[in-house]
Structures are given as structure tokens and as C-alpha cells.
Image 1 (cartoon, rainbow, N blue to C red):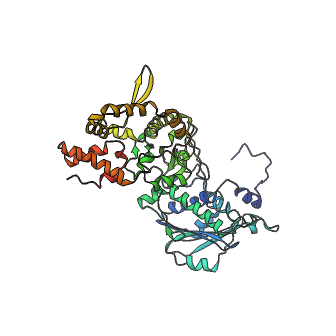
Image 2 (image 1 turned 120 degrees about the horizontal axis):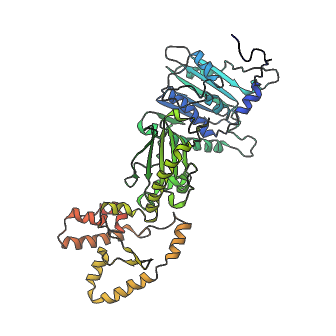
Length: 491
């Protein structure tokens, strides 16, 4: 059979193993993205449990990742150890979190110089092979050679598996900075903690549903949900479907700080800060690929901090969304950017309202009877604020002090005319998370006393207990303290 290449001179130009393997180490993996890549393989192998152990022993320190998945036969393991073991264009199963057939090798060798994999398929013998870069790069070594070697203790432990895979990283030259003066065990475990936090987020949907259990240095990893769906004040917006329903988008408006416990707020701060956590969260098969990024559609701004949007993709959109080998980058196709921009603007507009109004628009939507202390006024196109004299507590106080009503109104007018509006705006813009909540520095007993005084007045008016509780929940600033409202007696 003739070919257009029949009369062309040819010569093999295979890459040198040593230089190619060293080059593959520099694809940009961090320790946390590398570990996550190994967990992806475990998920594809139908593992229900993954154990990760950071084991400190100076230069002999190692990282061991094991799973209880299907495991591999001898031939399957050899194929898995081969760089480029599958084409990114190949059709894949829905639960396949890989794409290039490089993850096991590139992720592992980005962190260590020796990768050992031990695996057993049910009812079959244990198989084990090793990539040792010191051997590959030795002067007298040629070719892409893997070694059948493993530590005796590793063979004994892996031999007890019914099925599963163990990935071992030794000679951690990219994790342990031995040339850094004073590098210690504490530094090693700081890297481990960073990895654990990454896993809590990247695989949170697997952990939440119980599809996967991850044990990190002997302790079960808990899920961290960036959307705070367990918080009652979180506002989910309606689903948006693109590409014939294959891409699902779900926006969430997170609660204002005044609606969250200090522990929840602090945890978000520790994970990079509320400002940095806003944006899109792109998932493929429930695995987080890209976190807290507006995909080039808008810039991050402090008043958008409560906006987070989930995008769910099936894995056959990898090429269109430019999913990279590390599974840490995604970019939407031009055909979808218009729709995503519209969704973005609708979400951040609502998030800004929650941020600026301390979450009060939630109550406004529940009832038109919400009682604010301050009223926003407009006259001749100019804005100003007045104290709401119909506020239940203020109205009650004025009524009880009828003989001093004029003096009270003079005092209220003085307060209204001297509100430091420009200073408040400047401070909230510069330090948005440092503004105190109403009564934050006041003992709970004082707030409770005010609530009791107001509720007693309503009781005298003949209001039932349930209605009094509802009115307190709809009255500023008591609405910020539902836990104290629950402690009152309404009999």
C-alpha cells in the first residue's frame, strides 16, 4: 500500500528518558495538587477509603497514599507506570477524573525522586514497580526503565490488602527543603496541613455524601463547603442550565458576618479571606478543579465577597474548558462567556445588597413589617437618614415619657443631623470586616433586658407569645440575636 511518506528518509527522534523525566517534574504541581491527583486515581478505581500519611524521618521522610479500590494486575500496573498511558482525546467513563494518562507519574515525580506503586486486584497476586530518577539519570543508564523493587515492610503491609493500591513517594526533594537552614519536622507538617485543607475543599462533595472517606495521618478528613449550604442564612439562587442541560450553574449568596458564628467567619478568613474566596467554583464530576476565580469576567471587589457560584461540568467538556494536566485551571469557551457574565452580574448585585445592608433584605422579603432603627430618605435627589420613630422600642419609650416628648425629639434630631456618614462609608470600605455589630460589646443581659421590656409591652396589648417572638425577630437590632430571643418566656 503506497503512502505519501514512502520516499521520505526517516530517523527516530525518541526523547532521552533522563532529560524528559526531569522536565516532566516542572509542570507546576504543588504538593497539594499532586496529592489530589493521586486521590483522583483512587476514585476512578472505585475506592471508598483513601489513607494519606506524611511520615517524618529527616531525609528519609516519605508520603504514602493508599486506597481500597479495585487495584491493578501486573500488566495494568506496568501500563499505568508508562508516561502518556492514555490519549486526552480518548472516550472516557463518566467517573474518570484523569485525561492525559500522566497524572500518577507527573504528580508524584514533581514531589519526589522515587515513586513506588504496589497494587493488588482481588484474587490476584501483589504487583509492584518503581520509577527511580537517580537510576534513570545515572550516566550508564539508557531507556525508560522501571524497577521491580520495594521496601520489605511495604511489601508486607500491601500484601495484606484484599484489593487496592499503595503509592509511595521517597526522596522528597521538592517537599523537604534540605538546603534551607533550619528546615524541621514542623515545616514538613505545615506542608501536610496545607495538603489536608486543600483536600477538604477539593473533595468536599465526595466527603459530604459519604462516597469517599479520607484518613489523613490517622484522622478522618471533614468536608469544607465553600458555599456554606448548612447555614440557614445562605441564599441559593435558581439553577441555570447551559449546553442542553449538561452544564449546571448554581449561585449562592453567603450570609453577612452578622448572621454567622465567629468560628465560621474565622475559618473562611484562615482559608485566604472572604475577599479572595469569592467567584466561580468549577467542578468536574463533583471534583473541584478551580476555586474562587471570576474567569476573567469581572474583578474581585470587597462588596462582592459573599458571591460564590458553582459550575458542574461532565468530563467530555475538558477540551472546550481547557482543563490543564494539573486539574487546577479552567477557562470557559467564548460561546458561553456572555451567559456566564449575565449570571455573574445578577449574583454579585444581590451579594452586594446583602453586604451593604448587613443581610436585612432577607427579612424585607419575608415581611413588609420589618422594623429598622434608621430610615433612608430622599429629597430633591439627595439622600439622608432619619431615626424611625415608629420603631417599637423608640415609640414605646416616647409614649412612656410623654411629658418629655419635645426634649426627646430634640435629642433625636441632634443625633440625626450629626451622623458621621462619610466617615462610616470610608471605614466600611477600608475595613469592611472590622465594623462592629450592634451591641457587640454589650453584655447579653442588657440586650435580653431590652427584649423583655419590649415584649412585656406587647403582652399588655394582648399579643400572643408566638406573635411576640416573630415581632422580635423582625425588629432591629434584636433580629441579629435569635438565640437570645429563644431564651425568653412568652407565657
